[in-house]
Image 1 (cartoon, each protein chain N blue to C red):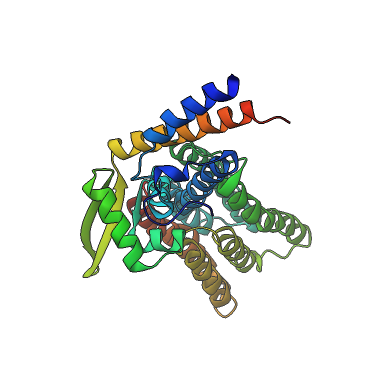
Image 2: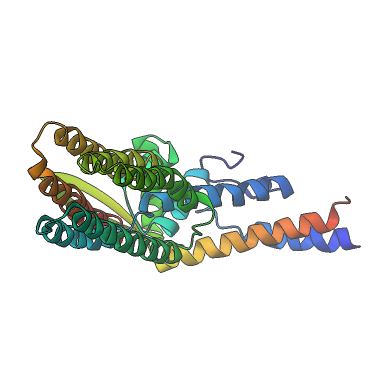
Length: 113
Length: 202
């Protein structure tokens, strides 16, 4: 009985998982910005150990969704691209972490020691 | 890492192990990201200002003991400001100084600071204060390079600048020592502090 209840709840949680964050690079970008406030494209690339193209593609998706804000400027005449987490992005990450914690709790509740 | 690169279908619902992996990944990225910004730029700026004042006051001292006292007071102020601003920035980033990047930064910087203090006492007792500025600049440079190894590239670069000043101090007359200390603990801290504060959020 407990297992079936948990299975149903798991299904609901599963359906509510944010597909925008549920991907390694995008989850990494959002997590990094949640702790690092403003980070440059280069810092994010180093931090997440990914390629320019990959990071750019995923950052654009997050920007389009309003999860991150892209700030373009010049530093010593060199273009500088920086990212900042929006309140919408912060809320999405909090919700995702909460969902993961609930899934973990449920899985532990039905798994015998 | 279990999480895929692209969008994940709902069929790939995380199991207990995968959910733990996701949470570990988030924590790990946040910790490494926080290390990018753990060094407080404004704290560094304030330390730079007090060091400039200390260099000026120390240069006016007639006795070596007076000179040493001024710099020791400045060091105590610098440590207090650094701890206060480090804690403030860590709290704002939501990380603890007793774990993760903050702990790493403090544990790698602290040994050279303690060694510097002990050697200062030893050299004062031996009556050899001439070598102190070189030792301070070199040891602080070493501590900053190792402490900043997991931080932004700016921090190890700051350490290198201190070590260069330390090397320069070996070849200049002793009367220039306060100028070199002012350049290092004052100028470098002000310049790098402002840069870090503007670039890395405080």
